Length: 545
Image 1 (cartoon, one colour):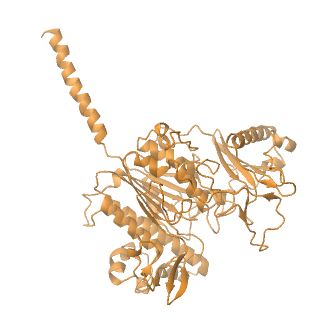
Image 2 (image 1 turned 90 degrees about the horizontal axis):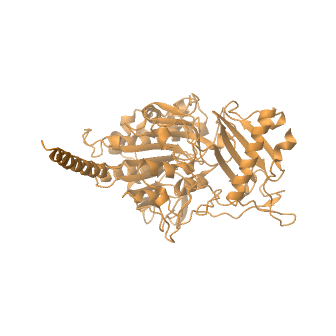
Image 3 (image 1 turned 90 degrees about the vertical axis):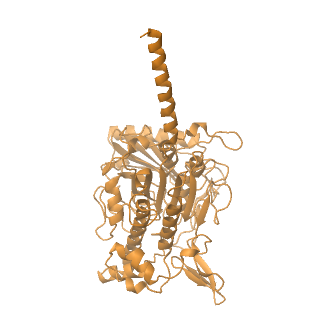
């Protein structure tokens, strides 16, 4: 054959193959994403040991979540913020509270009164006046995914964004529900935290135009078809005719959303911030009775009931992915093309042992939470990592998993958005053991009743160990802990530090100061003279030598 003809033949073969590969790459479907965000579920509140270094609960039963952990990757060092709104704001914005589009440091305000004294006594600092919701003009996690054609939905708690959820937040279906359900009944305003109310005008309601269709009381059909398969050993007959639980309604909405969108051309992002297991705990009657019969105190029985109810609704959502059309066959299963995430917004309400503290604290019991990622054939099954991750990391991670170049995004004014998080996508896929970031930060320029006062916290990874350095503005004091060796934060290293520990503390002190200055973090003002509260001194830990 003529050499020229050989070359020509090869070129004609290669070009179509290259074009075919490019077209096929474009046709590879983006994964659907389901993000279940529990409320106040602690690190030790689920029964799997994967997420909590074998400290799974012996009281609360979460078989669905346990199985999810065995099918994906669990994080033992997953963190959130100390309570609801700042965690949601950070997750959605991809920014610390110091970020320009965030500014949500606490629920309500940074001047939360002390419950112990029914007032606000002896405070030294006038707190920073925070924002209650993130700004509309940022490019948030919903906006990022919409650049790849995602349809977006939120069903549940909208803390960190306005309620009712209106405006340009990138959410196609904002089925947000306030935690306190209110309705006029017989002319009187009645409140409920978890059970539907029978309103004079609306009938059974959760005060949500999208979710009210799921508010009717439990009937035999629902009990037999939806609840019976879970074999929870509770007496389901107790439910007949009783008000629907909000957790079941959110689960039902999620199931129907998946059914409607499973076979659509574009993928979906379903964000499900449950209200369970938040305070004013009200379990489902059958499950509460089951735990009461086991001898638990009423408050703990209600909490156990809520956790199992949450688990059942994670199961509902998971089953909808397996069989979207509900015909009992798996030929329409979309599990393999769905990223399923289970996460919590802050530490638990009750006992988080061996962790110190609870919701509202900056100790591990207030910040460390369960986290599971499942993405079949992409994320290895039954794997565990101790890489520290945070709310702010979800936006860049999901962007990486869906092939969004966040550096190319621009806001309406033409400026580029700034994100504080780091992608841990390569941790999930097993390509890396660590992300390059070593430091995480929490900054609180105010008060939350008795649970925190003006303070900054940073965590640093040094080789395979994690350290925490606290700074308290009122007293100009530091505390330091090695949470890898001392998970319960019992030994304040600075009370008797070694020379190496002082060197680590000095470096952390410098990193903390640099971060505060770079982010122009607010600190409030001294009440005694109105002057700005200063940042920690550089090398302020030298006095502990």
